[in-house]
Image (cartoon, rainbow, N blue to C red; front, side):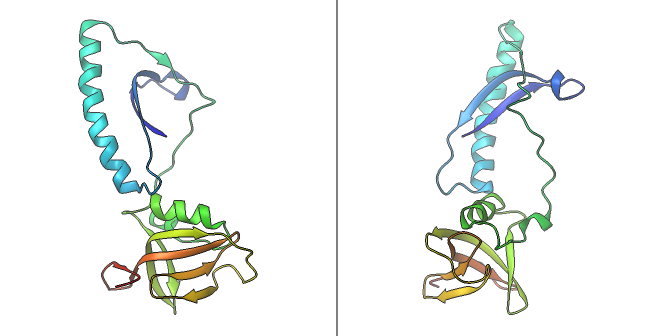
Length: 166
């Protein structure tokens, strides 16, 4: 679940007041790009509604709950480097969250490789994290700190994005 929130900003996090909020259900394969698009649409609707409430005096201002809020730092390209010692589910979420920018990446034979889509496969991992376990027509299966990651769509350095079965 994610949300669009219209906030009256004050100085410091404790001074912020929520004026209006709309929750958005996340799809199982939601990416940063698809969420951005959803938030833009809902945010547009919400600002119109909020401005109307502010104009007619019906807007309420609710202090933000510090226990439920957190600071989100700047997204940088370096965040996209895949750490295969982490659980496959964490890596798969990183891949979706950084799609389309800055994207998740690793190296293959010393060359950069972006990973655009992947799935988690359960199993008792006996290989080293980052070790390629299987190369099949539709995926590359890689060992992680917990379970396996199967890449479904990649982009080799200097090439176009491509599904693994292309």
